[in-house]
Length: 331
Image 1 (cartoon, rainbow, N blue to C red):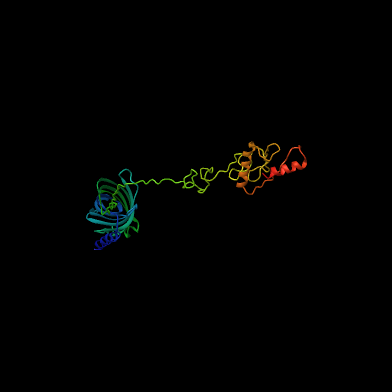
Image 2: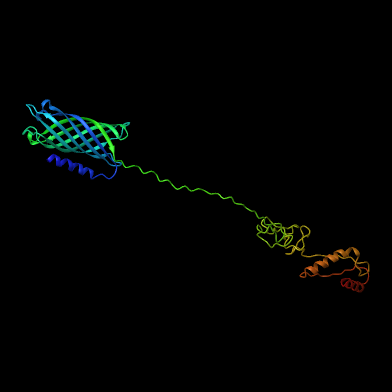
């Protein structure tokens, strides 16, 4: 009865861990070599087994429950017995070698002897360790082989271990693996390209101050007409007569080279020579043009003034010449 109660308890304990990943169930058959003091005839017997393993996701360690059953082991001197072992192991799976998965296992359990013999073969606690291989041959299926060492401690031999070596082969079936979710398909967005008609409107360029630079580029939009300007529309000051006064301020733009000028670019002193007819206050015709030009300058630039000086030659009396000079000055 006690063996029937222990097995469901172990199975239920392992099943309670199941949340993800997969299970492996392995029916096995094998051969048991027992230590001679147990009293088995020939020290060996056949057995069958069933192993249930739970595999965690992304882990090399797995719990395993094993049930090994020998239906008939002959005793020396007659009689036989069944032997049932329930084992709880931890299994470590190594990295694959090709398709082959090596593993190692260790754990503990309990051995139930159907026909106990006092001081020879009795129920007892079992410690076990082993290793094996799994070789896949179909989806979810693999060949499995393993070797297992068991040591049972019982009062039959003064609490010394009874040793057993087991070799088994079988098949492993994997089930319960959580299916991978298919990647969600992103909604397709269709790109709609509409034809667009572009109408180009040509706006005529304007040059408000007439300096040859369009208004949108003209940084000096109010330059005087006729001014010399640069690419930015601003006036360029020049000195054509090289008198030191720029054209923009030079009211006498044709002064002779080297002549002293004032701030307006005009000669500091202008001597206007006018010739008169002999013994007369009448101006000679060849002086009229110079006189008219000088008169126009004075009319245009009222800030200038002129000093009139008249001369005569030495002929005639002084009083006569003075009267003639005054008359010439007032012409």
